[in-house]
Image 1: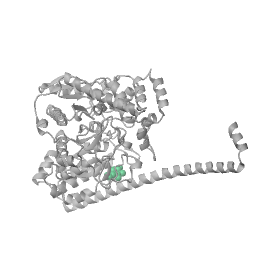
Image 2 (image 1 turned 90 degrees about the horizontal axis):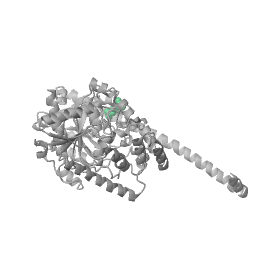
Image 3 (image 1 turned 45 degrees about the vertical axis):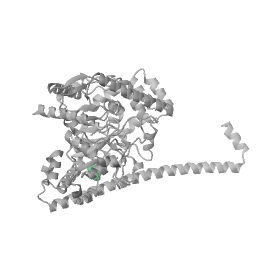
Length: 584
Ligand SMILES: *[C@@H]1O[C@H](CO)[C@@H](O)[C@H](O)[C@H]1NC(C)=O
């Protein structure tokens, strides 16, 4: 204060007045900028909603025009077919792509009204229908496909639920969309995601919250949550999502469908928007979502073609190995129920035990196996790796607009500077060691040498897990999944539960989900005694999050070694069939 007064006394009063005026002006400019930014964000959101409503209206008109002109179309028959039945009938000509397309468009628009799972109808699909005859040989000839918001589709935003990505339409289709089209598929809607793809919920300030098709009080999961909801409700027969911590598998489990996170790098990611571009510690990956495993396999077969390998030569040119997918040799199967970090819900634990028994009865051998030291590596490697920049990219993504309420709790811990994170982590360590670990990991790595060290440790860890896998001499692995679907507003507070899925992104093993059961009254009763491995606030939240789940779908996870996507699918198919037979 004294210093200021002295400076004031000794400075020319004119300079003083000028400085004060400049500061005042600067402040005013800042305030005006803030208001303008806020206003711009609001306008951008309004325009995005208008675009969505307009595309919806045009799609509705197209459907009703088509139905008027073709009163004999049997939509309910079309919608009841599995993907393999549908492709067969399309190929032999007993069904036409126009009928299939309009049936699914109508159903998707209808489903969207209650689930809010679509972010836009792709009206270009109508033009594609006109020339679809030229892709008659395609493996997905005439099949409508839904795509997650972040897949580049020419002239449409890949918003990732972020205001700053609005009004920046893609210049061209991403590689996967291009290949799907070449195979005769017709991308027809884009589907909802959480803000910045940084949650396993499905809500953002632009398009709002999506809802679970089995229970409107529950989230569909995320981040490929719009896909999960739409497919789970029968509004799409095949969808495509991305997964960096469970984003395909979680909505598949929550919505009662199946989904495959392929080995990272097996499918092209060119043209797919990410919440963490350039992040190389933990592998993100695309993959299909559908009602049955055969559909996932067909989609993989369609994508793994020369066209993809030439559009994106960085993808290893490994075509789909049908022999492995169709083989029926007995398998050696690893299994675990608890990774010592996230104890699964009673319904999921029961599902693992039941599926294990079915597999044994079918002649397979089951051996205990769990990736080593999950409770350590999940924070020290996986969380630290994905947020190696100390969360700055994620926070940057959120600039220029409101933060979704579902992310509030999560972002609250991203924001503090590293010093504060460290102090908080030290303070809570005696009481809540794993929350302390997570907070510590949120500080990131700090320097490039540290990042390289982390990458070395991750590589060593992969080989440690593989060595243990070899020692147990297993082909595939059966393990728990997050589920059943959560009540709203828990995902953001309960980031720990992704350990069950994130571990296979860290290891870059292909991993899929098969729905095998539904929550029983007995499971709900057992949940009342759920304690968790740590008995900390996260374990308590988990119990509340999955409560009230009776009747909801229950999934298990199936895993294989890197590049063994076909073996993973074969195992998933085996599980699916055994469960189906048992129901009969
Ligand atoms: C989907 O449903 C929401 C909520 O009912 C609606 O606002 C939106 O316009 C619909 N969008 C599309 C493309 O179907």
